[in-house]
Amino acid sequence: MTGEIEAAGDAVTGGLIARAVEGGVDGHGADGGICLNCGTKLIGTHCHSCGQPGHIHRSLGAIWHDIAHGVLHFEGKIWRTLPLLVFRPGELTRRYIRGERMRFVSPLALFLFSVFLMFAVLSIFGSHLEAPAAIQNDIARQGAIEVESKRDEIAAKLAEIDRQIADARAAGKDTGELEREKATVSGVVRIVEGGPTVLAEKGDTLLGDARTGWNRLDKGIAKARENPNLLLYKLQTNAYKFSWMLIPISVPFVWLLFFWHRKRHIYDHAVFVTYSLAFMTLLFTALTLLGSLGLSSRWFVLAGVFIPPVHMFFQLKGAYEQSTAKALLRTFLLVNFTVFTLVIFLLLLLGMGLAG
Image 1: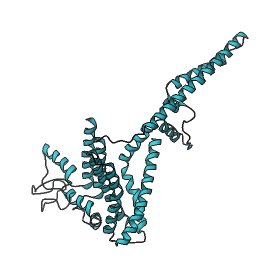
Image 2 (image 1 turned 135 degrees about the vertical axis):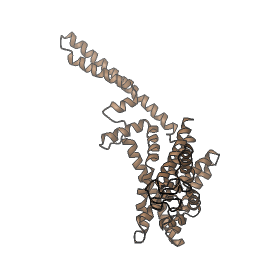
Image 3 (image 1 turned 30 degrees about the vertical axis):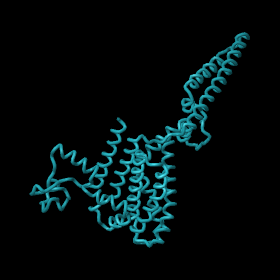
Image 4 (image 1 turned 90 degrees about the horizontal axis):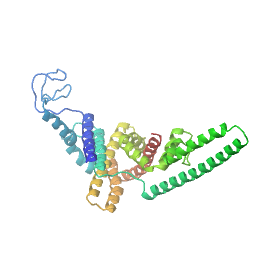
C-alpha cells in the first residue's frame, strides 16, 4: 500500500512539475480593474502584459482544482496534444516548432509527466530489475566457499604462530613480536566472520577481476559482483532521476541527419527528440498496463519492436517535410542512432551506479 501511495505521489508530482514548466495559472472570468500581479489594466479575462488570469482562486477547493488540472488537463492542452503525438507526430512537431505553442503541451512538460507516470506505474505493479536466481545462488555459494577457505587458512596460521610462541618460550626468547602477529591475525578472523561484504569493503584486494585504478570505482565493481541486485536497483533509480539526459545525448544524432540543412536548427531537433521520447515513454507505460491485464509477452515484444520505428518514420516525414524515400532512409539511420544513444545512457548509469 505504501508503494502505491508513493507511486501516486510521483504521478501528482510529475504533473505539477510539468505544469510549472508549461506555465500559466488557472482562472475563469475577470475581476475587472487591474492585474493583481503586475498592475496592468485588464482588457480581457487575462492580463495582456504578464498573462495572469483576472480572477484568482482563493479557496481550498482551488488547490485540488490546480492539482487536477496539473495532472490531468494541462489546461486542456493535453487532449489536443496526445492524439497528434500518437497518430500525427510529425504534424505536432512541425506546428510546435513553427510557433503554435499555447495550443499544445510543450515537449519538456509532456516528457517530464510521461517519465513520472511511467515510474509510478512501475512502482504500482512492482516491476523492478533483479538478477536471475541462478546468479544470486552462485554468488552466495562462492561467498561461502571463500569465507570457509579464509577461515581454514587463518586457523592454520594461528596454529603455526602458537607453535612458534611455545618454542620461543621454551628457548627463553622474547615472544612480543609473535604475540602482536597473533593479535593481527585474530583481528582478521573477525573480518572473515562478517561475511563476503565485509571482506569486499575491508580487504586490500578486490574480489572482482576488473581494475580501473580509480579506488572508488574499483570498490563499486567489487560490491556489484557480490550484490548485483544493489547495482540493478541503483540503475533503475538513476534511470528515473537522470532520464532527461537522453535529450542532450540524442539531439546530436538527429542533427547528423540534417547537418547540411541551414534552416534546421538545434532547437528543432530538441523538440523532435523530446516529443519522440515522451511518446516512447507513454508507449512503454501503456504496454506495462496491458501486460498487467494479461497481454501476452509476444504482443508486448512485437509492439516494442515495430511501433517505435513506425512512429519515428511518420514523425520524421511530417516534422521535416521529407519524401517517403528520404524519411525511410533517415528512419533506418535514426533507429541505429537510438541504439548508440541507449548504450551511452546505460554506460553513464552504470558508471554512476558503480561510483555512487
